[in-house]
Image 1: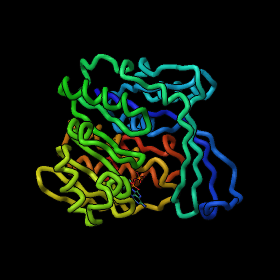
Image 2: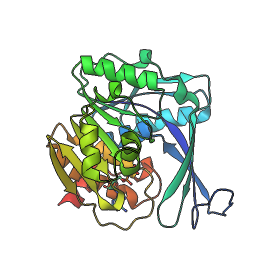
Image 3: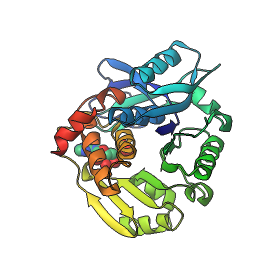
Image 4: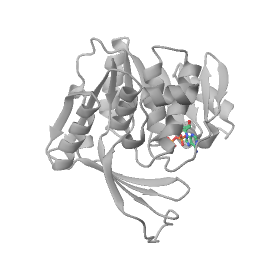
Length: 293
Ligand code: ADP
């Protein structure tokens, strides 16, 4: 079973011609309200790819919290460890440009309440997925417990933040986009991808996958560097592509090697780009298999 611990948000999204510059107001189309949050998105992507998933996180006691719990339940995800707390449910305000690029501001709300004691017993859990939208203390405590229990740990170090090696040393698989990799490496490491990967591998993770948008992904494992091309699809909205990639990759790990799992994740993420929204646009297993054949 995959345990996903992290954020769960309600997304408010509006489509505009071009993303607003600082200080600018742009007029957009109708807004859409849908379930999101990096943690919940990755849980949904994993479940749709065929994995058994349990989600750990916090929602508020408002209507949005109820709605998000129901959305996860509807995917067959175990929500027994989704705690309701007296706060607003987390919310993300997403602006999507005509080219599919997006800009997102997040109000964390209830997500800030996640704590070490929220972690369930790890019996039956083989893989843990973490991101950086939750309190760092909780993330580190979860990683330490999972490491002790021999659970495979994937850290999606998003949104971009610097990290100390204490957490990185516990991580089996690090997944980042190019910007997040640059933030992790710091300014002293050049922009060459292979050099950045070598530096990060020296800080702990056994394997690293870097997502590169329309340029696909790069995989670093056992000292070997491997590139996966992106699938050529008509792009409508890239929201949720990174989360789909993470969720599907980890769901695939028990069944194939890392390079093949990255390929399957890439197909799933491309399909997410062909439709608007985060969770609503994530593919189920048959559609992923079809794109791969
Ligand atoms: P993030 O959304 O976290 O910044 P990326 O933009 O790197 O992540 O996208 C994650 C993955 O989604 C990529 O590795 C790729 O597989 C897929 N993807 C993203 N943009 C496109 C695109 N324009 N066409 C096809 N696949 C894409």
